[in-house]
Image: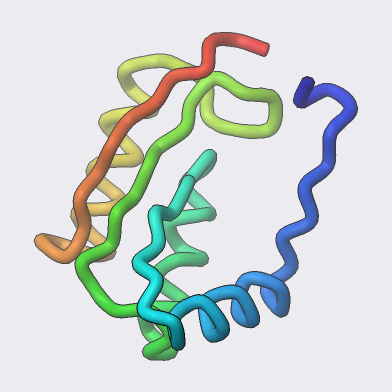
Length: 98
């Protein structure tokens, strides 16, 4: 499915969703397919748009994201620890190679 599917996620759309749903008390689970997604999450945290704890789901093995290798999982976890410390809870999910 990922071969022909594009999911629009502009920073404006993400910000609007966080603001509107956050006002309702929604807690988010952040799906991170790549290291850059962790940095995007840190950007919104630095702006005060979201507050810890952060529930981060690492998604591996899809086209356009990190491969499903142990080294990528360890790198993603190390980066989340560096950016968020004890404010993040990580969950891993492997989708298999696309």
